[in-house]
Image (cartoon, rainbow, N blue to C red; front, side, top):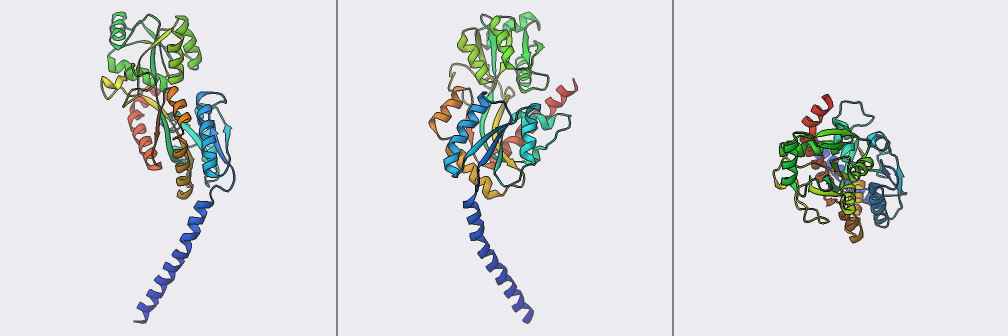
Length: 325
């Protein structure tokens, strides 16, 4: 009997301690953040990603009650910025605007990384970005015309690539394999020179992100024959189909999302997620992203984590094959 009484007293003391601790945890969640939040952008200033991150940061700041400061850390295929956040104190005051390269491509490549995907905790999936397959002026007006031309040339058409395992090359390969065509890969160091060569007529096809694809279309010297996204068509070009309308295996897209260092308290993650979701409701931010050929997403940290798992499974075998080539 005495032992049972002592056990009850112990349980009651533990329950009381927990009850006393809960308000403290709640206060800690309410207190976060206690200083400015640094949003690391692993891209140079002035680009589309940087502009979107700054717009998002401006909207999140009043919701968090602290400034959100942009820190550009470009280089090494986004690994420099990702590593900086992975090594930061896990308190929610340093977060990352990551891309598909950061969270899917880099971890799947055989090269040794300074960070692991597991070193970063998902906050929210901000956008997904399909690639536009753009042909030079007069080459083809639509997908059927492009397929007929490519097959008649027997692999004679060329396309720009930022490297065998780059996402834009992956998108081109997915489209070629889905359509049953071949093209010759021409290496480039980025989208800008590809765009220049397509518009001058020296390159037949490019597989590029929304802003570059739309620039080619708006110049009148390139035609977007299709997007590699999934779901509804992009609002900015409702007349242009998704290749996924031809089959589910023709989806290839990257993404942007917010992450914190692993072991960041769940309360801080939840606060950041809520602020980001509210900020993403701003009409001007949504319109800016839509105008750049992006799909605005959202959801909770667990939704972003699930997206990353699917992305990893989708590209693991193809990236391994390309890395061996």
